[in-house]
Image 1 (cartoon, helix red, strand yellow):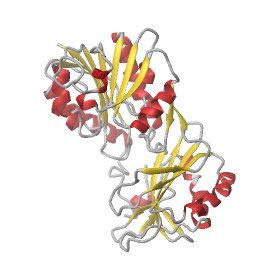
Image 2 (tube, rainbow, N blue to C red):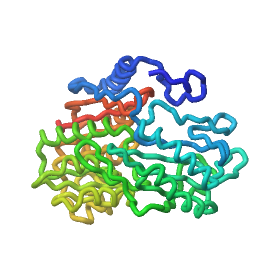
Image 3 (cartoon, rainbow, N blue to C red):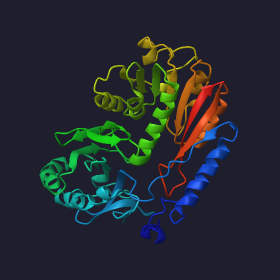
Image 4 (tube, one colour):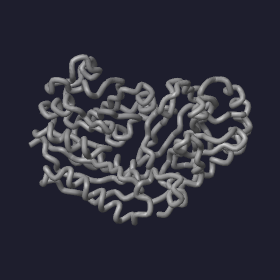
Amino acid sequence: MQCSYFDAGLCRSCTLMGVPYAEQLAEKERIVRELLAGHPDAHWLPAAASAESGFRAKAKMVVGGTAADPTLGVLDGRGRGVDLRHCGIIAPGIRAAFAPLIATITAAGLEPYDVPARRGELKYVIVTEAADGALMVRFVLRSRARLDALRRALPSLQQALPRAVVVTANLHPDHKAVVEGAEEIVLTSQETLPMRVGDATLQVRPQSFVQTNTAIAGELYRQGRAWVERVAPSSVWDLYCGVGGFALHVAAPGRAVTGLELSADAVESARLAGGGMPGLSFVVGDATAALAGGSSAGLGSPLAEAGAALPDLVIVNPPRRGLGEALATGLGSSGIPTVVYSSCNATTLARDLELMPAYRVREARLFDMFPQSTHAEVMVLLERR
């Protein structure tokens, strides 16, 4: 894949842009295998390859320029907007939405936030696309000053972009390097975006995390399910369950599946997607406390409070920092027979595995969630020795 923005030096976010995709994938697999070289018995499955372009189903676009002539993309070194609305890794359906979104910015008089001067209202536009083309659009505003103007512009936006079924204003008053604030104001009657990922329909709320590469996320969930089905556990914990992707895929008659997630917003999404399925439940709580002490659900954890016995299998899908010492050692001493570990950082995965010598890596697989970058996702099936 070639990119005119990259070639012109306007955006270097895709650090591997221009490198043949087969070489990218081979190098990622080489690095991941090297990091896990201490587990020579692991059987590596073929890597899950992505489309090279158009794979991003979520775009976080910094707004620059002026309300009359806004840019959507990134900021340069001086805080000026660089327009990237034709970025080739963004899904075509999202790119097609940019023109009516820009018209809405102008109609509502949403002055882009000037970072060096610390003035203006509109910081980001965040767009998420479901597989059926439906969109969630979030305008990240500094304050409520132009909220009424945005409400007035909403009917014209929906007429021009009927796929925008969820539209919100996120309030982010602070001058700091985070994308969004805590307060979300839903402007449409619909509050969640149904997203078909793999074989489940996730119910995504505005502040819920979802993988940006829908096709590869589906492959990730299906691989997890295949491993779980092979083991055939009667009970499963899904720690760091998010909006429930793994839990929804492994739920089955006669199997108790419990998802644990710190974000109440994500748990609400997961419960909505689960639709009251027998045996499937989601709990708000800190996964790091789930196995403190190793022999039972950790003291004070929601799973302990619910009287949960240790499961036959645990799925973990932690953030980039990994499990950490407390949870990794807790798993290691728990006696739980099987762990499925999905990692977005192979370095912390390798560190955590060193803290879990009671398990051996039986199978492993690379999932290329972010082509054109060095980022790699890997999932391993762990069996107690």
